[in-house]
Length: 300
Image (cartoon, rainbow, N blue to C red; front, side, top):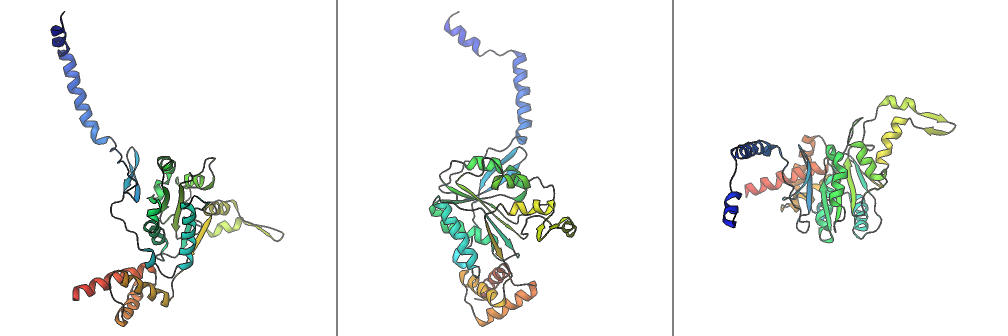
């Protein structure tokens, strides 16, 4: 058999094999919509933040293209919290010892805004942010594995964190903070916010399990379990409702940050806005500023 004959035979396909190939292509076409999407390649030089996304077959890091990070200087009346969190973050960026942080307290008082503002403040120093929803903390080990060894410093950010009894995401977070033999890599910290100090619901009947030995108080096991999670965050920062003058200062700051002008009329309107919303908070002040500056722009 010469070389030309061999070439001719190499292109011959039996009817059975041809039928098998056709059926295999049909099966692959049906399976393709069920296959997980190819995870995007993250260029951390130009990507400042990602979200962890979860699909049918696992999760992936998705770049955030439009950042919602307030200016650091626009956050007012939380100076003590700003100073403590910024110092901890600067230690982290320099490779010095730094703590995981838990920000707790009243809603709308700047907890999540403060963490997000750190990103634009320190992005040029190598800080990056990865947002992880509470229910996705079960994938924490996978997330950590993907970021370990990168030449960047990552804050794993979980907003509005709280757990119910038996929540599957509770133990992975607890282990990552201070329970696993490996712990978090040196280029990662966890910053979380919550309206609950101990991250889990507390029930009155749990106090019945408290024992008193002499002058010592020994909480029940359920209380100890709940305290043990928040206790693993080294830095606790508490936020409280704002008084009227603080609220007005925050509203003024947001009005000016959005390009508006503060006036007596704006002051009066901001107080009425807070009354209608049922409370004074940084979120309420920002929402007023958006409405006020936008309305004034329409008038012009």
